[in-house]
Image 1: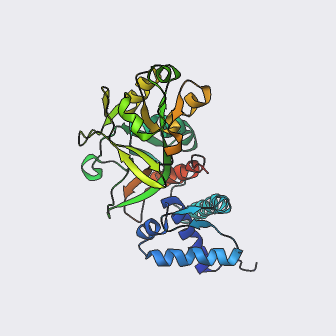
Image 2: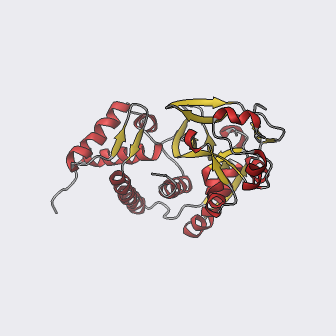
Image 3: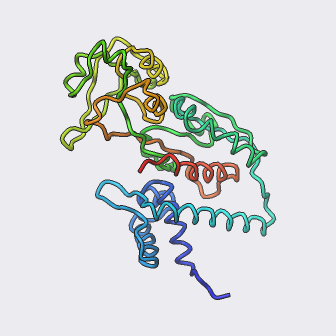
Length: 307
């Protein structure tokens, strides 16, 4: 059989997949232990070979094109099959097993991760799942966790960081509240509204609300008589019962907005988001159970990414 790929092309495909999974060339370079320029050259080789754009590049971000996303799905599946074939040939275990300990933010766990886990367990029945649902940052070494999902993860050279999604933020309220208090049309109007607060568990600091105005990012600290500490879903419950306005992730209130039980306001000032990132210790030899979960989650994340 004639060779279709050489070693450099296969390596370029691996680096392309890593860039897709980690959300950029720099993070892929960190994970692979090479330079961002080397990752960029590898992706460029693939794009030149096929005459296609796999990533849309700006000065601020690198994102998969629709073609790149479809290509990634096929490449990831092929690389996973190659890995399994190698393990089988080497006489290693074919099925992941053991306990996987994962720390997940409460809200993201309920709306994104927990619904997927029965499918993962059906696929890998030898893996037991120990789940830590909390917004508290964990210590991988001291507490013995394999991986964690965090919002706005800080750079840490001891950890691999893979972007799961940048989730849009929306400000919502009930129709009843808006009839009672009026609908805000500018950011200045927020000062006259009951804005439900959320307090970070680690610092006790109330988080700001994020907006875009005239093409520039704005951060506003709003006021309100309700303050929720630790569990973001408390704020969602309050807003669903007419307590005021609340800024939250769109995936939490998608069904409410579709049903009309909540209304999005200040849409002209939207466009901001916060990133959810998968973190795990930096090491070349991951247990099969971790590799299986990472591959599973990276495949599922494609359904969450909004155009």
